[in-house]
Image (cartoon, rainbow, N blue to C red):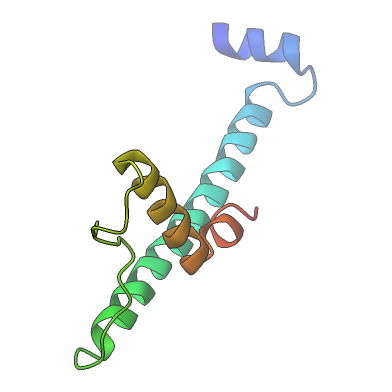
Length: 95
């Protein structure tokens, strides 16, 4: 009852029902984002294993003698390559 009273102070019309509705909407959005992320993971795994005879591109390059950049820079470049390859910036956070 105390929560409802405090909610009525913040929102005299809807009270805690407004807060519950807002939280339900957030849960729905998060569920759809999770489903989309899971679908992308499945798609990536299927793409990776669909043609085992073909050479798959390496997302994380191995250091060579000609590659003298520090390891932290390699990780940064690799993560940018992965995110650009799967379009994670556009598809996961487009809501």
